[in-house]
Image (cartoon, rainbow, N blue to C red; front, side):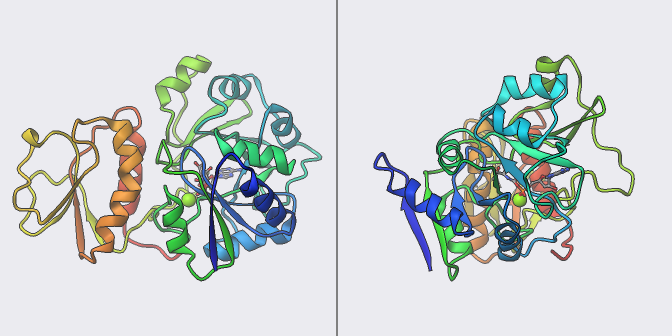
Length: 324
Ligand code: TXA
Ligand code: MG
């Protein structure tokens, strides 16, 4: 059964989580982006458990979460740009993909056999958990592979209801979409996944405008599969006029749109605030999906700042479903 434990000042949660991790069990932990399903990154059996629980294809590597620069540099080799990015944005919603160190203790399964590794230093209580455990935590988002990521402990408990799993409840995720992923290898700066930190912020911190991944057949970030973050319902994007009886995911002030024919409306941000919209995105998608509608209509969201990440997730959620 799922056990939800509130993160409080008493530290009972910390002892329970460290005990489970040390026993090779997964623990769901809150981060500022989304909830993660964490396991000891150096323990192949524990990491295999994460892949099994999520139903995740084993070619898709996991992000390793660290509590500071010392742990990070034990795992990966940071060039000048990666160092600038870590200094500017850690702890925070940024994952750096860098070459693995020669004696990197992370199990090959977590990095899917690649010679690079995704590293992130999360903010908040996740950092305290990693520090107490003393080892990096491999953690994908805590959802079944291909589905909507969790932004609350309740979402994780619903998705893994029959699993023996400790879920740490740290309240709602403040950012709400997954971390920005930047690959810094051989002088290249590649934006693999848009997220809480946008391309302009990366350029300001490094003096380099990150380039998009090459659109060759090779997958640079295996998790960037076309269909991802998918609700059960089909998504209809950029709805300007709501059809009758529609389930509508709205954005912005009501003066912009006629929503009167929709039967259910959830507004990502009535004032048009993109940060607020990102924080509400997954929870609202789940709520509309839970009503069992065949289609969810989504109003346009501006393609600026974290809006780029919101639109990326909406496009993938709307994409034709691949298996996995
Ligand atoms: O905000 C986040 O990043 C959350 C929280 C829990 O930290 N985690 C997350 O993990 O979104 P996940 O597994 O859902 O997405 C990780 C992404 C995948 O697209 C994976 O392919 C990519 O990171 N990735 C990991 N290591 C990589 C590597 N060495 N090279 C390229 N992509 C990598
Ligand atoms: Mg994910």
